[in-house]
Image 1: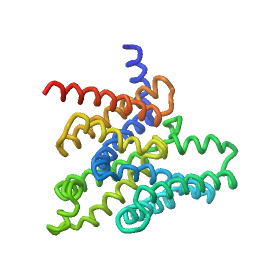
Image 2: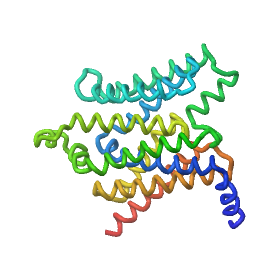
Image 3: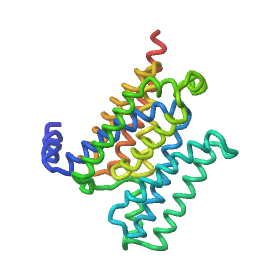
Image 4: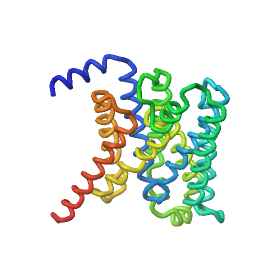
Length: 283
């Protein structure tokens, strides 16, 4: 045990490991904040859909040989988030069907473009890295940390400042609209923020894994708590702890970062299910 702690201390001396920890904590914090609202509004699948859209956009950026892929990935993902929100509200194609269509199409066309116009000789490695996260944390830079910190600060401030409005729109959107709340504006705001968080998180955990960081902490919290505030607070704490444990285990066992974090989230969900069952029986 002491040997493992010593190894972790040695790894923390490297800047890229500290960068990964900071980015992982910030992404876990932001995704769990948004996840509670998305799960309660039965719109949690949007995270998975947007992650596939981001993969397709990243494939286009790779084919175009852009040094800064965010120029394409960020706007496309945000626009897709807005479109998915609107299709879920007032079109003939229901929300879940629209998400499935867009996500599958983006995934297919993204891989097709990367296959036809490969940007490197290691296509399988590029696809695997994008979908499941980088197997190495050396890809993160100080610029990534600063951008993530700035976005995370905006997300937390928005959530805290508009907490009451978000709470009202989450539980009873019709009533919130009736009393003068601009529900569409707040839904749009949440869609844009979740798109930004997903794009930022792709570099660490991958496009297929980032939606797990949105869904699992919220679902785990709901196994134990009932109030919106308690669920949100516990979701944030649990998400951060799982991310740190996952990254530490990834360092020690040399496993992929994204897959390891999600595996820890799954274990935490099962433990919360057991804890919730015990709590209900003890009442």
